[in-house]
Amino acid sequence: MARTIKRVLFGLLLSALFGTEVHANTYTATSCAASAFQTAINSATDGDTVIGPSGGGSATWSTAVTVTKGITLNGNGCAVTWAPGGGLTVTADTVAHSFLTGFTFEEAPSACPVTFRVTSSTLKYRLYNNTFTDDGNSGGSVTFVCNNGLGPGLIDHNTFSVLPGADENIHNSSTSSPSVYTGWAVDVVPGSGNMLIIENNTFTYDSKDSPANSGGPPYYFWGTQAIENFYGAEVTFRYNTLNNVSFDAHGSSPGTCSGHGTENSTRWYEVYDNIWNVTTPQSNQSNYADWRGGSGLIYNNTLQNASNNEVTGYLQFQEDCSSGGTWPLQSQVGRGLNPTAGNPGTPGNYSPAYIWGNSSTMGVNSNNTTYVLVGTTPTDATNCSGHPGNVCDAVLTTSEPSLERCQSAADVSAGCPVTYTYTPFTYPDPLDTNPVAPPSNVTAVPH
Image 1 (cartoon, one colour):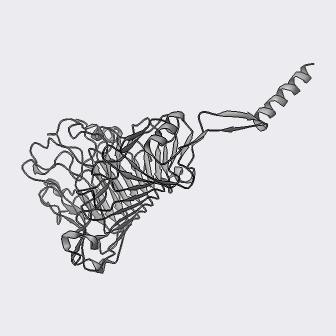
Image 2 (cartoon, one colour):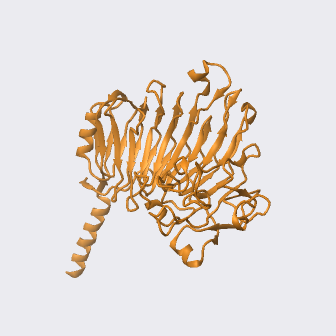
């Protein structure tokens, strides 16, 4: 009798495992309209998919669409044109990953029409295989995507195309306020996946189309940025292509350095294996990147068609404030964890930026040598004599050097700065090869 019961239970177990299929639900929006997507989103739960209508279509969004669940939102070819009041906000989930894919987003307003909200406890979201285009009619500086919060995110395999207007395609902010110093009080782990990761995207600015030049050379890139980083942001930026576009890690607000009360500075950046391309002859691109605060690693980047640039373009370090204060400033280039975050008068700890292995045509310089000095070692009497102890804020070498940092409480305890071995985060990002999260809400269908 006992054996019979065991056989029955075993048979029920096999039936449960092999006689049913487990799946999440898919909800189809009846059109590409904002209201149609919101209705489908409202019906979905964690792990579900909301998809646009077969064959795609187009719509103008003048109302807000919000996602507060870990779902896949697939435009399925829908082309969305933004109008005042329109926007898409995704709040990352703690139960399932959030995915946004398959849209063409057109004519962005100056604000952030696509916004992700993250925290340290949310699962990584993924924004992939979308197209962002600006026709130049919205006026002013355009920003397509905003990442708000200290938490993990992945932006990959998207295409960004802009016309004139000093556009800033992505904004990455750890907080929403320049007076909140949260981003400078948390631990940063170099090579971590718990920050915003941007990989395998293409950013293009058609510098020839700038009306300021009346269609003729020289063709300026007008400070067009792939990304701007603010307020203690952390970012890994890798394997992207930048056509007439720059990278920016923001610094303190311009003005005097003594108060330093408006803190915009980026905390940490890893920028590697990207391709910069000056696509247009007689171009005038003054910098390929600006690092205005914090620290990180910049290596193995490539410049193509440098001869098209009629001026010298730089990987540039700088300090935005122009006078007052004493080196080192709290969050300037070369600073790491600040154990007294919230007190702008207290300098952070020494954690230099390192640069190596980039194209020889990508020169490295500092445009404010009062505060930011570039040397060949952390202490360089030749290049960094302007600082006490000949301390350099950025270190330029021909190959990966011995690295020093002060980025965590453990570093402080061990005696900042400490040496460390750097290993880049897994490439491609694990979500790139596993784009669909296991569903959290499941339905068993007998058959």
